[in-house]
Length: 276
Image 1 (cartoon, rainbow, N blue to C red):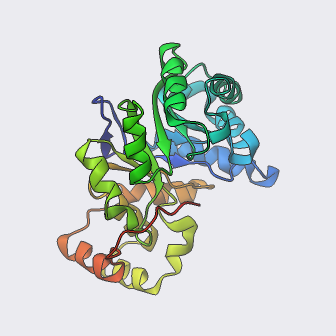
Image 2: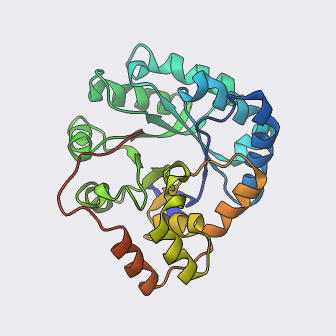
């Protein structure tokens, strides 16, 4: 499994497992549990979830599926912005820990920026870290100006920025990714295949055919190419997990990358950060 190095030198898998919409339908529960377990067995041991996902249903599913091995995983969850205050973050974290069935998170993220001052969120995150409830903290959906404000507010301890990033969403390459790379802060890319919508793109299909790999694997391999981006696709079946895992072993050539750049050009001007 490819790895990505965090700012403190700890390494995590470059390919993890997302859980958005998981745990919300009883008919899919058995398949989703089997998928999460299969992914862990294949080395996809970074699990991303959030209190927002199904109002905690995804966290509960993760706890049910992976309870016996949670201590060996890199567990990520996210807090609503309204809960990211000095008064509420500890309570939100405890609720997530209870649903997951664990006593710690490896990474706790501010889901997006809200009205709570960043300095207060940083203080609350650091307090959780001191208490041993979390090992790292970070943010999600913060653009370059937000990240600059975070650092100015004392956020040097931020471990990552989780953003919407894929072949069709290359706006972060203009200034956000260079800003993060200059600080050795890796990115977590959610919806790395645009929730499957990229797979309908004819150009991607043509490039993938030339490469000799399925479009989804090509799109995932592209996201992980630079070595400092963690992809967290969601897969609800064992077969889908296995297909995703193969992307971590796919090597894109210079010609492949050039073809993808032509098919999915980077925006020429800065764009605001997209989010779903």
